[in-house]
Image (tube, rainbow, N blue to C red):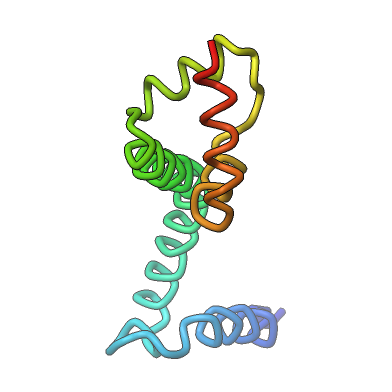
Length: 116
C-alpha cells in the first residue's frame, strides 16, 4: 500500500501561516520554520500585551489625574484620599477624561472633595 501523506492539507496549513506572516522582514515571511516560529512568538506577545494594556492605561489615567490635580494645588494621592473620604466614587478612567476634556467639571469634583 502506498504511503499517504495528505500533502493538500499540509500545504494548506503552511500557506495559512505564510499568509499571516506576509510583510515580515527577510526569511520570517517565506521560510516555513522561521515564519511559523515568528508567528507563534507574535501570538504570545499579543496575548501578554492584551493583559499589559490595562495596566498601561491605568498608569496613563493616573498621570493625567495627577497633572490636573497639581494645577488645582493637590497631589494625586491627596486628591484620591479626599475623594475616598468624601465617599465620591468615580473611577480613574472617568476622572482622567474629565481632567483632559472637561476641566471645569474636574474642578467641580476637586472643590466638592476639598469642602471638608
